Amino acid sequence: MKLWGGRFTKPTNELVDEYTASISFDQKLAQYDIQGSLAHVEMLAKCEIIPKEDAEKIKQGLQVVAEKIATGKAELTEANEDIHMNVEKLLIDEIGAVGGKLHTGRSRNDQVALDMRLYLREALVTLVELLTKLQDALIKQSNENLDTILPGYTHLQRAQPVLFAHHMMAYVSMFERDVERLKDSYKRVNRSPLGAGALAGTTFPIDRHFVAEQLNFDGVVENSLDAVSDRDFVVEFLSNASLVIMHLSRLSEELVQWSSAEFNFIELDDAFCTGSSMMPQKKNPDVAELVRGKSGRVYGHLMGMLTTLKGLPIAYNKDMQEDKEGMFDTVETIKGALALFAPMIETMEVKKDNMYAAVAEDFSNATDLADYLVNKGLPFREAHAVVGQVVLHCIQENKYLLDLPLEAFKQFSDLIEEDIYQVLSPKTVVNARDIVGGTAKNRVEDQIKLASSRLEESKHWIAVFAEKVNVLKKN
Ligand code: ARG
Image 1: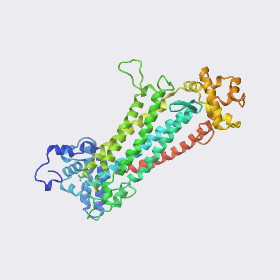
Image 2 (image 1 turned 45 degrees about the vertical axis):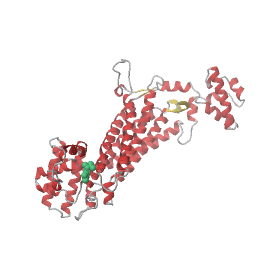
Image 3 (image 1 turned 30 degrees about the vertical axis):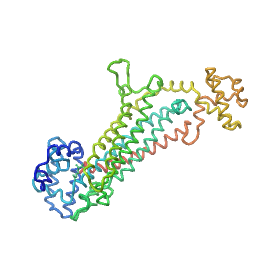
Image 4 (image 1 turned 90 degrees about the vertical axis):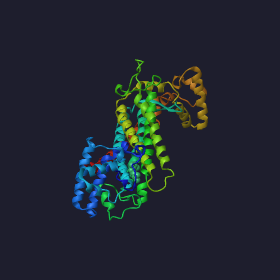
């Protein structure tokens, strides 16, 4: 008989069991479910809702069930629908009818919301940690490439030279925002819904704050209806995760391009590439491609969750069971991508000479010729037109700016002097961008310093919050 079978006159159709059960995926929540139950039963005893001896039996029973599930010795069944009822059933099998007191003053509706929050807050700490490791790898590459110049692109056309360190630090900034968003979301995740009951609260004199404190929550979700129907935290997570994988996907695209023979700017370590079953010469950037590809499923989960929630009346609806697989898959997808990206970036070979050669063979110093003329008094718009003419002349002559003799320059403007060769050299061009956030070497060094100190703050956050979420493992 089902735990809720009392008012039914016959068993559920087998297909219904199969269709409505969530045990195949929510068993991932087992340890969180049990930890939540341990805190709940502790509170029931403290508030004298159940006798202390019963609470002790239930706690011991829950520990045994936890152990059995962890070691694969417990049978989790579709007939028992979900992780909550499977655990309760296992508990009753273990300690007898007294196990039936556990669910006093609680519903699966507040229970599942609790489990989701416990799972997610731990995942947030793990993901922030993985993100900081990737930032470390990018900063390491930046430090090693403070003199590496490559063309900067707009429209994928060579635009102005930049330091490779500057390019890497742009990604550090993106991932820093991702870290901030995940950290910020933690405080909305970290609230206890337990005590909301099915929707309206409970008639028992429970202590919601006691449960929240035991589980290291920052407080409770105030409104019981909101507590059981809120899945904003899932949507917010999926949205933040979408930004993470979007950033990873952009970086992936660059790695794929740069490792092509056409660019030949980097070489990914053999350990992070794969081969072809037919073409013996191939070395493919599969990891980067797959991360780029997996952005689709993460965005899909975000759209899926938003769509599931849209139009749902308050409070719990079975539709909400659809919140789990997308969230789990997103956590795993992002974890997998970040775990690979950090060492892949760290071990990538940067082909400095090829990057420099690309800069030498382009017009990415053209803006600097225009700026030179502006410094000599020409309005920028006129200078722009003059340089356009010089570039056109070079293209026709199959030359670059630095190949032109001074007399040739003078035909376009007699403001141009011998010092122009120095001004147009890639290194001068880069270092001329000497403003906050610019690509001049000293400015990039400043960026690295600032980003590194903020990274230290994130690492401190990780240490503090890893401790907090580990309350689960301790009790
Ligand atoms: N398996 C359910 C879920 O994942 C748990 C909550 C079920 N509540 C209920 N009243 N049917 O959402």
